[in-house]
Length: 69
Image 1: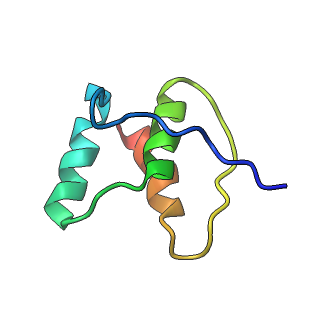
Image 2: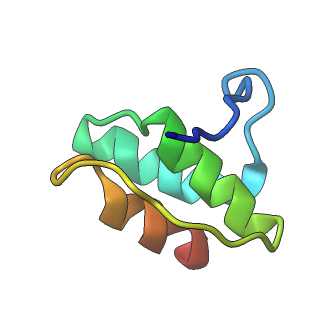
């Protein structure tokens, strides 16, 4: 069975701690994927978990950007 994280409304209430990450993504011409945003928010809340998505899907940015924030 595949379990997915809940999706939140990030556009309305973005976490200000993540603004530098969103700005960096924007400078690259990218938009964070929902699972990346959820991962960053979970990290900031002190939660841990497992990221399981296909190769080339953005796992590294999901895992690394939370601690950088």
